[in-house]
Image 1 (cartoon, rainbow, N blue to C red):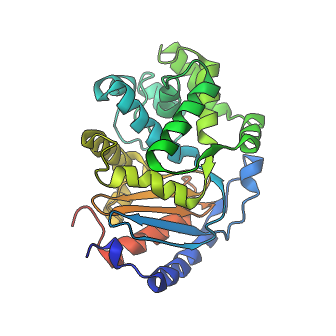
Image 2: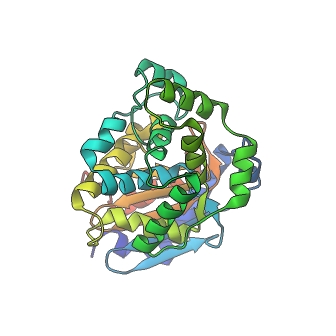
Length: 304
């Protein structure tokens, strides 16, 4: 029996309680008013295994925007549509030691986004999504995810309005610099698409179903694309803390400022968590604490 399949609800409940102790070290983001409404004590986990076994616990009815977690799947979508050679002509795969919305990093790299998991890379890829405008791009992308993963994601218009009301000046500056470097066709369409896909929302089960796409062969995703996305998640998915958690946990992961986190256990399954209190880098404190406990107790690290 594989590691995740050994997990019992009793153990999960106990380990969630341990992880929730760490939440007090985090803070719910307040820059986006709609996100600021989240209760820092909310906590949910859903795990899908290759065997068909699922297990969940906590506030699983909570709906949250995927925010930066969606970057993982826009990369997967574009690899499917355009292939790796084209996609990695647009963005690199190098880890960044700067914050996810750093303009300075982009300037140092002469306008070439360092990887798809930071904002400069994700805005660049948003500019390349199939569709005539931001609305169509988001609809087609969300439809593809739902059909492929069997989840029920949707665009949260209330969240989107809140994001638009407080549009990030850092993202505007990044988009302007990308356009100067000829990496964007249309600044406004790229930003609008980026904001919309970040507001694609669902429950923790939906995020786990997305994670399953990357965990094992399902006949839908080419194995090469799965390997590429998992590798980029491992090295870049938790921003400048990625290397630390690759050592401590040893799983491909991606976080979002909405409190979502997905961890991939290749060959076994996916772990999705929701915990809206973030550390100063922008990663959900409780969610990472739980995945770390699971990885240690169940020996999940991809490094053996």
